[in-house]
Length: 309
Image (cartoon, rainbow, N blue to C red; front, side, top):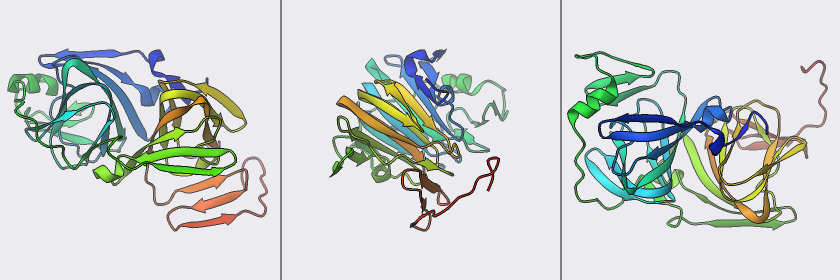
């Protein structure tokens, strides 16, 4: 494998347990070489909570439920969640955390690595400026403050919020123009209120590509294989994939990527930033797409000398 592909079984888990908070964390983003975005897998113990209730300062956070059952706690309201759910937490909006059901809860958490992220923990009366925190009194760790505040109450679940969608509740679009391309896909995060990042699912058809091989100047992407099998195309190389593989494509690599479905096709979770100044390059056709202004053109001639124009 490359530095940008990892299987989540290869990533060592870190146990975090205190009071009503308990789970196993895996930093999949760093393991896959991501730069400006992050991805963590949290396997929350049955009946326990993932984190202290917190409000994102500048980060837009997206949760995807892999398995199990439980609740999304948002400003003292709870919502039942299930596999396939996407939950969007905009910055500076509401306190949130997750509680696992009787069979535990397995989630992926996507987010951007902003230069200064301050999360407010209203129940712990502390602001977390990761990796440190402000001392408003006792100086206890934010998790200890949360535990001291007691386990949040879980009342009757509310109707599903507007920031939550399941993959079976959205419209799927088939894009099969013929030839080597073929996917059925859906938008998850955008209809749930995401503005700075996106989360989609591509069902890549057997033997087909999900898109034209391309690379980005500013946008960073993360891909997680949810089902099936296939390959990741990186430049002139192809790498086999199976469920649990994570592929990171930082901006500015100059290496084009695409995905091909295997014999049974491949279900691919696609996360990316929305960078208005991003430029996409398509080496097969020598085309450049200036995405912020919606302009695509073909490069007639490029001279490279020692890696520079």
